[in-house]
Image (cartoon, rainbow, N blue to C red; front, side, top):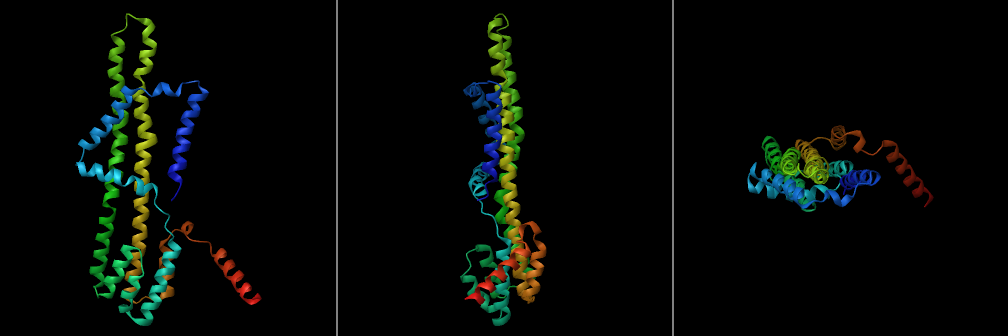
Length: 270
């Protein structure tokens, strides 16, 4: 998994706790049941009310897969497609049916099977594009849901503060109580801002980014399979697919050449 979410969460909450420690603010002073129930309960409630119940359930289902998502190795995927192209060029497209049996990726497996079954190129492209949309629909909804939660939370916090301040006004005759009451009143606003900017919005961004990477991965596979179906020369296919991938996601050519030279020298020595 990519550790960005874990590192970011630890850094963000660590900085908050560090600030409170430096300012000699009791950490437990912000954990008041009333504001916590109001902010998280109401935010979740309006989030559910803004859509269908299944949208909420599906949105929470994408949290763990998004956090634990593995980094896609574009270079390996391209090498695998080039290898498949070489076998298809040598043995024909029907050989892709056997290749599909050894593929673990359901998307690539289905695409290769469709080519082997003789599906028309235009129909196959449309089919695969629809499948990409379908596979990422849940993540898109999840990102939208958490983004809306990030928008609701600060406003809900302000509502909680306003409600608490009405209680403060009821105690104007007791000046000794005003300080603690006013401090408690602003806890709701604090949690609204914390939950929005340290939880819901970063979570929405994570889900959206993982979805974008998954779309990129499947698009790369789709273009590779369609090129194989068209009979594109394997070396040209590799160059074409590498041009679709950002250079930062591809291994440096110098490192690849170096590793090949080391291997050759080892073979000579042996």
